Image (cartoon, rainbow, N blue to C red; front, top):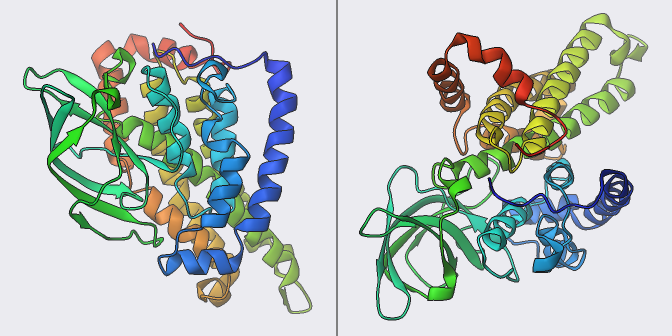
Length: 374
């Protein structure tokens, strides 16, 4: 599988990860303010926040030390992605972190600036090789920050049907700008005779052959992000329940509210475990199955947690002034992106049925949380 497990020893990384996550929280708290989020809703890119996370080295967290990165494990990288979602960072740090790791593992050099992932949506991109480099044709639908990212990582096929990993630099080309329900850019790009240098093309690693054109890695990102956003929604709901008084006492003391909050906490815990399992399986043969489980379970939990947290807040949670909508809107958007629950549940069913009922228990046991390679 993809050789990306270059992290330091577990005990060393645990200590370093704790410090890194604390610094990440402090950095994001300072830069991702309500004013920053409102400006992003209006289309402004958070330059100061991006510069801060770049200076902290977060975009290269999953890149090996030999390639110029921090060489952290996917588990720690997943926790970083969760924290960015907990603060609703309106920038493609998660996409950049994963794209940089995939590109450098394929033999490319790490690049500066935001990088995003593009899933072809079932329509293959065509790559025609020329004397110098190649020419790219096709359409990229709903690319996160497609018009703002400096590079787009994508998969394209040549005339013989062989797949290649391409790091496409930003250039002026036809873009259909749109946004998801969270007001995050999701741009569609038309590629017609776009020249690509030879240095920007790599043979597709065997480990990415089952990635549905990078869709699997997008699903991994969204699963981690949904966990972070759900954790923030639950924190907001708990705070509000302890502060809002009705009939002379906080509403959090009412059994009905306690029951709703307990259900939301259970959903967060289950989703977090599934996302953690996918991060632990990174680079192993069980990674596709673990991602399918994580995306399906996190998507299911996202809808329930958003519903419960809005119920706890009542009318207050639907106001534009309250921060809850920044996170619930992202939950509603992220569960739809890179495959809804039904898509990944079908993948799980096909994987189980393809091996027979007797293989189900061994498949589940094989999803070890330690992240060991097979």
